[in-house]
Image (cartoon, rainbow, N blue to C red; front, top):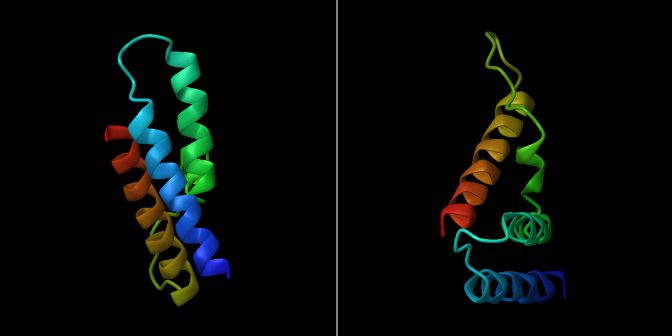
Length: 82
């Protein structure tokens, strides 16, 4: 059921962005709606959480966390630019 719900949320998020593109006016409203969308997609944390620095030697868990952050950042940028 979680997978089905996740798919529904993503469809809702897609419709949400499709219906309300930023046109240069009312930035504050667009910003709040975009924050809601990114929260729905569970990627909003990249807006406030810095990327982990690389270190040598590095534990595998740290590498995975950085890759997870990079993926979420990519998703955020894609939705904002779209």
